[in-house]
Amino acid sequence: MKDRKIMDAASAALTPNYGRQPIALVKGKGAYVWDADGKKYLDFFAGLAVNNLGHCPSSVALAVKKQLLTLWHTSNIYYTEPQAMYGKALLKKLYPGRLFFCNSGTEANEAALKLARRASTDAHGPGRTDIIAFEGSFHGRTMGSLAMTGQKKYHEGFGQMLSGVTHVPFNDLAAVERAVTQKTCAIIVEPIQGEIGVRIGTKEFIQGLAKLCASRNIVLIFDEVQTGFGRTGRLFAWESYGVKPDIITMAKGIASGFPMGAMFAKEQIAKHLVPGTHAATFGGGPLACSAAMATLETLVKPGLLANVRKLGAYAIKQIKAMKKKSPMIKDVRGAGLMIGVELDNPCGQYVTELASRGLLVNCANEKTIRLLPPLNITQTEMNKALKLLGEVLGA
Image (cartoon, rainbow, N blue to C red; front, top):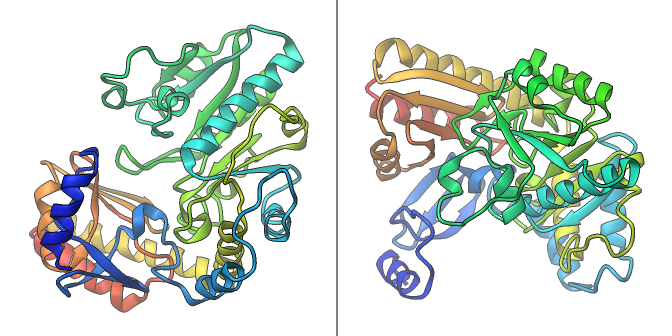
């Protein structure tokens, strides 16, 4: 089936809620994908920071194939070996606490919201359930996560948002301090705001949040759905800030494309999630956990995260050099292989032009091109992408 037939079939059958590129992908390997017409693309979008090991990594494929012939699904009423072993392995990369497995980032954030409120109610009684979040944030599209998302365009048309959520400016600790009240139970923050254009939290801001939360018995939630699993050059972004959040939410790169999310919580908070308080039918299933285990084992192999830091710094340096030649480039921001290139005009036309030349990227907001290549990208592939970017941006 050709691109056009696939697109026509999808347009006739599916809801129109995605602004899709006119490309129908049918195959992927490493940093490349192919469309139904046979065109090859260098993928610097990586399934929106999901395919952190590229497409169809052999280690993950073999693990899933083995599990596929053994056990697919039971229920969380029972224990399974893949879930238990993956939970044990992931906790070794964190610090003492517990994990809850689900299917996506928005579900992980819903779990965090419920747990923070439940823990606060258990400890302090009813009425201490307010959340502080940040302008420009993105936490998901289910109603609780949507309420925490600090972009009004995502709220339009859906009626009253969840009460008790206050949004304050990002990187403004004084604004947070003014917003805290006796009703505040949690603060949720992305250490790097991805969807608004790769805005990086300063060390002073993030560490200040941690100190504030500790002094006021407020739960600090890190949304690491996009920054987690190596994207910034560390396994998790909290490592770069020298803080240990009370709750961490994660998804995207966790299982190389298998639907999975997770919420981590310190022991004293996690204990409030008792039987009957929360659940996920498909959360932490055998297939997803097998994929997640193979993904984690590959990510922590010597050299991979160092490659992320090295090539990320190299890419930012090269794009900053382009900025001197191209007046349309206004700013370059990034950490590891999470990079935003802010332009002086809407970037949609440039994303389309890059795709026509064989490079897939996306707009993080109206004017920022976001680069999210696989973490095992090579120097040659990086140079190829930067060359195309420079050509299209007039640098």
